[in-house]
Image 1 (cartoon, rainbow, N blue to C red):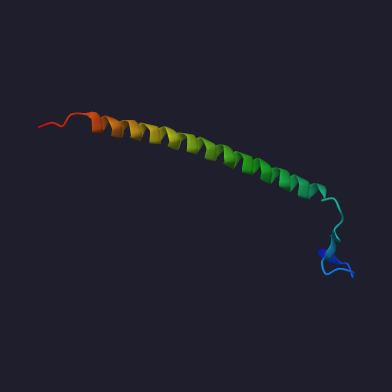
Image 2 (image 1 turned 45 degrees about the vertical axis):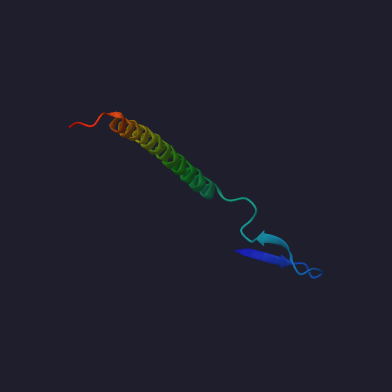
Length: 74
């Protein structure tokens, strides 16, 4: 739980303190580490998909340009 400490001489908060201690426990660090690995994997997949979409876009643009430059058939 977070505790907001107010300075009686000012209207703003002086500090934010926790009653859980300063350092997170080992399990929380492992959880955060696992989540970062998962996030990194997802970012890698997103980058691969983005690159594939860029390649597809390039192919479609080239195809479109070819269609425009081809003479019309009677």
